[in-house]
Length: 139
Image 1: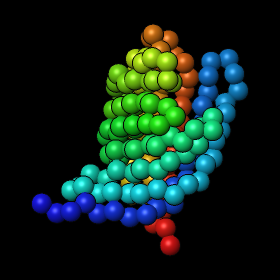
Image 2: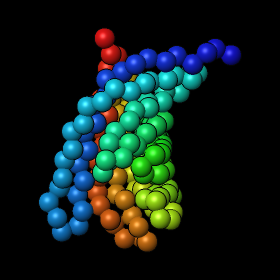
Image 3: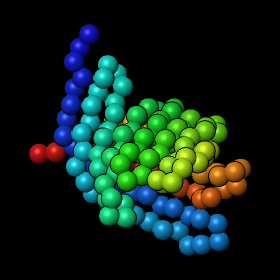
């Protein structure tokens, strides 16, 4: 069995959040991360600050499904399967809530991942999200 391949990458995170009855918010974050390839499976790991807490994010990248795991200041499990609803979880620190992702669009090609989804809490749409990750090998 071959060893995983690890590369330091520059990550650009573009996200748009649209909550019902509010204007869309857009975030553009640049950070450094690590791309690990285990077999054929790429994983992208990076850290970001949210509300003055460090959040470690791991993204399992694929062209027809993906999984985002967050730990640290926020604990979250967001599964994505194109055209399907998936159950995930969100723990802001005072208890775990079950959440649902309804993936509208999912694209992954080397260096570029994009997902559009609705986030549902108790079967109600809490928001519509677009997340784009663009990563390049760091110099």
